[in-house]
Image 1 (cartoon, rainbow, N blue to C red):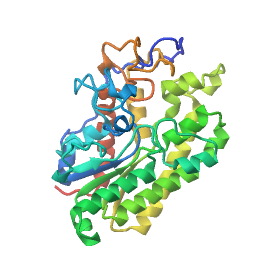
Image 2 (image 1 turned 135 degrees about the horizontal axis):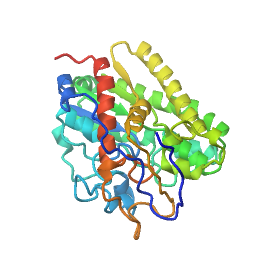
Image 3 (image 1 turned 45 degrees about the vertical axis):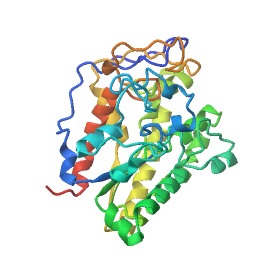
Length: 360
């Protein structure tokens, strides 16, 4: 596998790792239909946001082409050229793509779920982050805010707690991916890896508390995704470029950043084990985004140059657009292409399906 090499960051935030003839994970795209989910409720950040952030801030690049160009032919607020992982999961269950909760024109009364994720959001509240001198630049709609939106939604569709438990017992809840922006903002605002590592227990506790609240409101099947290998993403490869080859692994990903992601994921898996013991009647599944991404990464026939600049992000005037995004893993240096999301979703579904305890 050829090493990824850094090049001038004066051009685009697009172009990156080649997918080309990457094989599909061996899985039926409709496989989750066996679970007979009748709704999906999503909390998280830009990995999952289907349009909430652009309703908070309509002037952001995510509200403009080329975002959304491949599947929707228009921007929807998704941080990709097309579909997200949650979109492919919804398709696999037979449920319509989730509307963003801040879309006042959406038909939420149909009872098929709702998406509360907000791009740029954090697991920790803005107030908690401020105590660490960390500032969320895009939104204050943290995980706790999204939970409040979710509970407000349930208050509108349920008569009482018993009614809610009955209505939600056949729904799928996805809490995350979230927490990555807590670490991203801290690192890019000057915190050391050691300082950011000390944030991990607080971030994991916030996610654990969110899952507990989901369960207390009727959630019976919950997927809790971990972080991607952040040391492989162009935003970090550019922002924390090192001259010492020992700082990179065999795929030319930054070791220390991937170690941070692994530490977070290990702590999250331990928290899930505790939650399982506390809630023996609930199915709680870890969503292994890290290894799903690594599978895609390792099966890419070759890895190309990355061109990334935070000053010239995708969607801004004059920034070139990749002609063949289906051949790439990274869309804008931070988020995945629609095709990469499909491969990751397939791999994820293959991994979680046996543990969801669904019966044909």
